Image 1 (cartoon, rainbow, N blue to C red):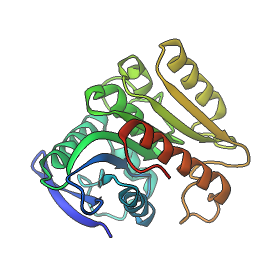
Image 2: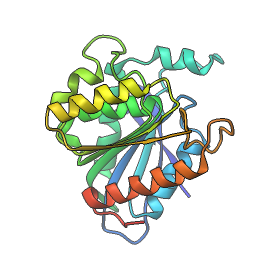
Image 3: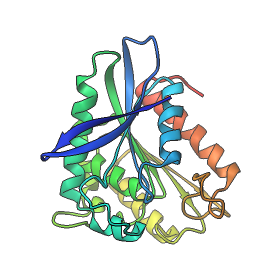
Length: 238
């Protein structure tokens, strides 16, 4: 089972949910970016499953700067700013770099919903940090949160291979958005593979959301994600 740890970011405590394989001196790492509900049981489960497959996985709580005022999910997402997110990701990478056992190298990043958008942002803004990136139905990739370029506008900076998973019935990102992102990655010669599932909408991997969850596409997408990480990070293939 994973555990919660705490680091300091800009003078504020930020919790990180982490799990790691046992009896390994060195292991690849994955930063897992939360979805709208936060680092909930679904995100914890992804961290734990990655650890079972040989990765040191860590999910930072990107809502740590916000007051505990009972705000709804969309309000909490709306308060996030890209500059803060980059600082949080940098602190998470530094935290993984300080671990004595196992030592973490190389690193990948993946995220769900808003975390898919953040993954795209991080891949473009911190290209030297990542050996692989996975985007699960990341909406608002064309929009900046606060000052600075939108994730889409950072596409030229991507260096690592990217895999993406999308629902054919989703509207954020819509199929048109996915085609536009795919076309830009192709135009710039960025290695990537995208998978779209008919009959699935947003959050189709989230088993805690009975309305959205689609077991078949969820299983297929996660298996493809693990195989992708295995190829590029050297974990245990599914």
